Structure formats: structure tokens, C-alpha cells
Image (cartoon, rainbow, N blue to C red; front, side):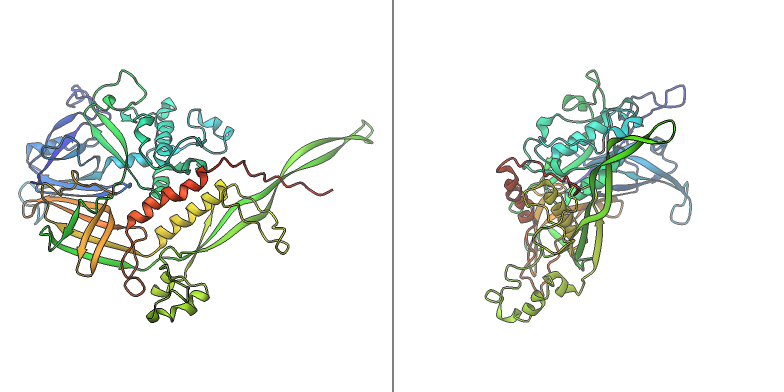
Length: 515
């Protein structure tokens, strides 16, 4: 049976008893709050969630809700919290709806806010004055997958430099990321004071992982904050692969576990992308005259000088990710879809003809090290494309795929399930997992993108998941059904194997200036 238990935790910087505080260690549990009249939260997959809590102002428990503290929300009888997070705002309300002594309304975010707490420094182990010693944060190509990339990113930027250290954040060892699919994300990562939450969002569009920051009573048992003697509560970084639970977690009216649903389709924001990579650079040997005291040239010195030009490689891409297999094929196109052949021949994708959107966008990716090179088989000025086996090609394709999923058509299904012990959020499934919903129009297998938790005097505890993804928006006009997200997630594995066939030498971008 669903029942939320909400606890108040101490601040990261608690006040002593002499200062009027409780004298508790950082993040320790202050007490349980069960006097609330309304609670609501939105948990988001690989993003920062939000929450609000309302309690009578005159109740003694309201005194626990002070700046710096936070909450921990558990399902009754479960040891791991559903989420935890700090207080960010405190309101006192006294009006017609909040009569008597009024109400205290506190709101905040979940602990995924830590994704954006530290920037990705270029040289995170050194003082900021040495930042220019390294052009980009040095991702190690030996890291096997996106989970290890993120683990190393947070490790370097939260435990590397003492002044930036997040003392109560605990990060697991490399063994925690061994069960993820292998990929080449570390080879393509080029970070220079980027926000880690934005990188996480971009990677979420392509890779199947779940990242969570969650309160733990003694995280030093399973992870480290850099201090071997650390004890007590803290925040634990958890990296987990998402799961395909379409056979285990199903919702539908005929299954008796669905009160209602809301199914939404949305047009793409844009369908075409221009990507620009690094400016052309080269080195020239320059001669500088030397002079006698009388001002007469008596020789010269030579030195290599770095030069750069405006030339860049540009690519133009159309979002064809949702084209049916028969799109543009005269022999395979169904009889009632023959009219689409003319559109396909003109270069339109199925998404564009479905929604009537052909908007273009531009992405400046000068951090991708593919410079302009003349294609010898093309007219003068024609830029050569990067080899398909190169890290640069992969980085460009990742940018395109992220654009397709972010800007492409979307579908979402908000459901109001009747929870049972067998199918309960936090136990049977979590954020990012793929579940099944039986609609009158057919079956939909999609990712759990967000979950709304609520509890009030009128409705009691409720859980309302929203499923769907960046790109799950095929509409009935051209498509028989929405493709399963899992095909996109597991497809990463076969796509990555191409890069594991052999080691490829680095591409030489040197341009020699003609004499």
C-alpha cells in the first residue's frame, strides 16, 4: 500500500546548540513530519526535480523547516528514499484559504541539483590560474562507457581541488559502471567549463542510463568522498542502467490498474540542422629580419607561428530518424502511400511531411577537431567529410542525434495508475525504465520520463508517471505504431561495435603551406 513518509534532514552547515541549532551533524535526520496538509513533487529522469510541502504554521513540526535543511521522502517499509533534496524557499501564508494560524509552504529541488553544482573545469586538480594549461578536460579514451565518463567527471570536479570539494558527496568506485554497454563517449567528450547537467541531458538523449543523487544514512559503506575516515549521512551518486520492463510493468484499463490517461502528440520544433566544426588552423615558418646598430639588415630569425582562417567544415542534416523503412522506396511503399514518393524524392523526411515543419537550426561545435580540408574529388572550396571511423565523425553524429531527439516530434502519456504491491514506482520500476501502456489505439512501450508524487487530505498518496521520450512522436498518418524506445537504446550497442573492430590512428590535420 502506498504511504509516503517525509523526514526533515539537517543542513550541510548545521548550527550549534549555542547558535540555536539542534547540534546535529550535517544531513542527519531532524525528525519526521506528518502534519502536512499537502505534498507534491515532480521527479525527472536525469534532471532536477522539484517539490512543495504545506503544513499548519502553528504546528510544532513546522519549526523544523528552516533554511538550509531539506526533506527525505520514503515509501513506508523501504530503506532507500524515493528522493531527497534541500529547501529553497519558505513562505508563510495567511488568507481565506489558509485561515487560523495560516500555513507554512516550503519548496525545493531534489538532490539532482548537484549535477549543476560544479562546472567541468579544464584542469580540475589545479588552481584556476592553471586552467589554460589544458585546453579541454582530459577525458580518458580507456573509460569504457558513458557511466564511467560521468563518474570521473563528478569525481574530478567535486573531490579534486580542496576549495571546490563537496564534503558530503560520496562517489562509488569504477566497479559500479562495469555493467553498462560499452561506448566511445569518452573519446568524443571535449569539456571547457561546461555545466555537467547539460552534458548529462545531452547524453541522456543517446544512451540508456540513470543518474541519481540520493540521501544515504552512511554512504561511506558503499562509496567515498575522498576521506577514508568519513562517517555519517551524506549524498550518494548512483549510476544505473535503465531496464526494459515491458513484460513486467504494464498499465491498462483492461488490466484493472489504470484510472485514466492523457495521450499527447507534439510537432517538431525543427527538423534540419547545420553543424560547424573547428576553424582551419596551420603553422607558418616566418622570417624576421635582424639589424645592425646602424639599422642595416644583417640576417634573420625563423620561428613557427600558429595561424587560423575562417574556413570551417559545415554539415547539413535532416531528421530522418522516424522515416518508415519503406520511405522513398517505390517498390516497398504501400499502395495508399504512393503519393509520398514525390516528397521523399525532394528530400523531405516523413516527419516533415507529417507535420509541415522544415525549420533549420545551427550548432557551433568548434570543439570538434575536424578542420576544413579540400576534397580533391570536388570543386575548389568543397570541404572533405570526416572518415566514418573517426572520433570526429562520431562526435558530429552524436550532436545530430541529440538534436533529432531534442527538437523532433514528441509523444507523452500521462497515466494515473492504481498501484499494487507488484507494480509500484520505486520498487518494480524507476525513472528511465521502459514500461508498457495498453491504449485503445494499441500498445505503447516508452520510457518513464517523470513521475509526480502527491499526497493530500482529500486524495491521499498518489503516483502519476509520464512516459515518452525526446523523439517518441510518430503519428498515425504515416506510421502504424510508435516504435519502442528500447530499440533505440539497445541499438547503441551495435552502433558502438564498429569502433571496437580496430584501433584507428589519429587523423593528421596538418596543412603544409605551398612554397
